[in-house]
Image (cartoon, rainbow, N blue to C red; front, side):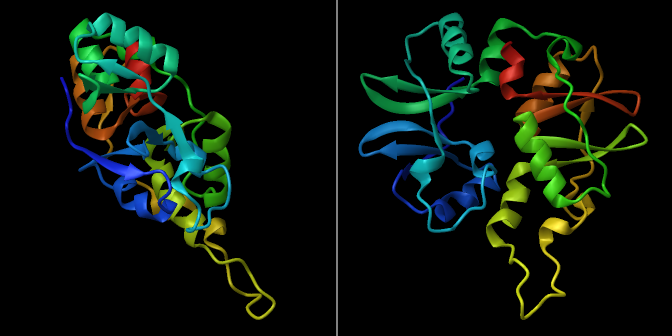
Length: 235
């Protein structure tokens, strides 16, 4: 299924210009290098250091492979797995016409059970500090981290929400020594509740949930078992 809800953004724009697209799913931002479609901004790269709003988009881009519209789904899967990115840019006669995701490939080639593709990501607790959540996301190389209480899922924290804090927080100063950094806050203030979860045996339901949320949390009963991101759907 070709997706056409993309927005072209120049690599030399300031990174702050792309934040709005990261916080909502209406448009898929494709970064341009002149007239050439290049790739996407990787949220995980944004978390690697304290950001300045004046930094350029080009410093946080990961390139995406291009495929011709005539390519088979199986060939697209091979290219996607080799790239490690869950997106491919699609061209026709050399012109960019859209993109496809790992969801589109998984739907065409058949679904695997959730338990066969999930990965265990170390969860955090709602009492943990925002700085701890950022550190855990960096260490585990993901953009979502589960939050548990007594091993039971209560929600998730997304990297895109932590980026807001990374780019706006003020450090303590000699003039305001009592000021507390947002990085010291508990993650419960950023907790996204009401997450739709799947069981270990889920197949078709899994695809639908990942398509809607961008990820799926696997639970057995209420106990957290693992995380599934886009690229995991075709592994």
